[in-house]
Image (cartoon, rainbow, N blue to C red; front, side, top):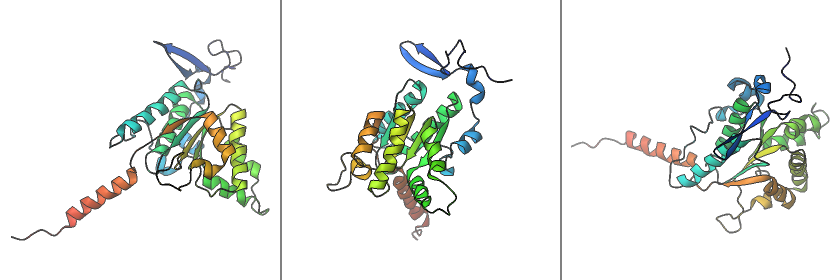
Length: 257
């Protein structure tokens, strides 16, 4: 038997979401008429194309400890609130910060919450891989068309554009990114973005995000996304340093008396 037609559903009025108001705090949950659309974890990871290294990313295991824990806690709270309020939260989130601070972890955790608890269709898109694949379509023997590659990125309800700005800026890169971002904006689809490039780099002369993606794309992103600036230490380097210190201690020759 087919699911109830949301156009006539008396609970959600055809939106697919029921709006809740608890003590002045508004949130949205998936209506029962779309309950069957919620995927299990395995279906989500495969359907959203989540890379294996991020399969375990959840809000609960996001590490907020360290010298800048206030910034990390604030970023997690903002991402959780977006997922809780969706689709009331317009636009999307722009996670900005240096490498290794957990931007992709939080973004994947957001997709996971949206997909599994609300049945939202989500997609992980590595921007550099996408651009390389699009350039590959210039070869007529590739077997793939630009439309084949772009359609999921343009039409999926919530898309994560990971590592924006990693590709050297060219007019073609700006034009391609502008098409993606503007199309999603005009269609009212939410977009999550992660980038290692800042508006005010710590070193004078370093490229800003606008330098890497162009003024048009940057302006549109700031219009459609809430900025989540994460100021913290590189977690990967911290772990690597700690592992090195432990190994050095273990391997240190014992002093003889």
